[in-house]
Each structure stands twice: as structure tokens, then as C-alpha cells.
Length: 180
Image 1 (tube, rainbow, N blue to C red):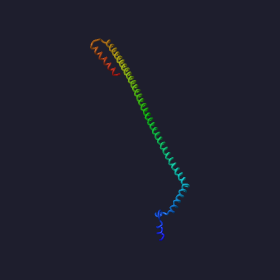
Image 2 (image 1 turned 45 degrees about the vertical axis):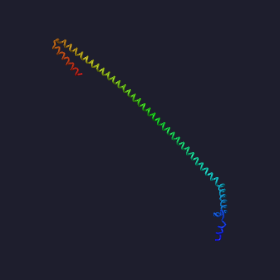
Image 3 (image 1 turned 60 degrees about the horizontal axis):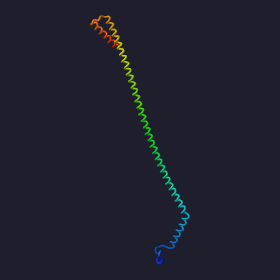
Image 4 (image 1 turned 60 degrees about the vertical axis):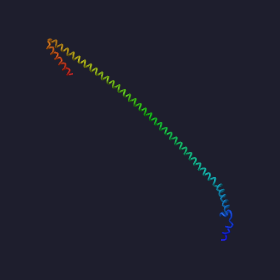
């Protein structure tokens, strides 16, 4: 018990705080030696590892930027290709529409020409049949006139006989027309 009061009497300055100056000096020397030893043995290795890591990170960031730029360039190229494909598709579609329109116009022109030819042929056939019918009527009429003249010559020309003869010739003409 005597030691405790004696320590309290001797402690002045830094010792009054409960810090032993010799111990503090030993701790500082030990810390300095540890720092010097770590600096010479491990500091350069640690800095090398940290520098290598920061280089890898920097390279990774540069690679990521490069990949991002390439991806953007590829996306732009795909957009251009897609746009070109759309434009080409529109051009092909327009050409197909134009070709279809030309074909439709050509077919319409051809159909009109064929219709005109058919109409002209039909008109020609009608005219020929009309001429043939007129010729037949003329022939029939001439035949009837000849027949009537022959009968008139064979008979006397009195009015009653003349009327009977005309009626008979007309009846024969109607009968002939009914057969044809």
C-alpha cells in the first residue's frame, strides 16, 4: 500500500495523465521500426498490387467504353440497314404497283380493241345477212312478178280475174315466206 501513494506523489506532467514516458518512447520506436519494415518489405508490393488493380479497372472501363461505342455503331449500322431495307421494300412495292397498273391498262386497251373488232365483225355479218335477205326478197319478188306476169298473159285482163290473180300471187308469196 505504500507504493500506491508513493506513485501518486511522483507523478507530475505527462505521468499525471497515467502515461509512462518510457513506455510511450518504446511504443513510438516500435511503431517507427514497424513502419520502416513495412515500407521496405510490403509498401512497394502493396502499391504494385493497388496500381495493377487500378490499371485493370482503367482497362476494364476503357474496354466497356469501347464495347459501348461498338454496340452503338452496330446499332446505328443496323438502323441504317433497316432503313435501307424499308426504302428498298417501298421501291419494290412502288415498282410492282406501277407494273400492275401498266398491265391493267394494257389489258383494258387490248380488251377495248378486241371488243371493237367483235363489234365490227358483228356489223359486217349483220350487213351481209341484210344484203342477203334483201337479195332474197328481190329474187322472190322478181319470181312472183314473173309468175304473175305469166298468169296474166294466160288469162284475160278483166278486173275480177286480175284481183283474183293478185290475191293468189300474194298468197303464194306468203306461203313461200312461211317456208323460209
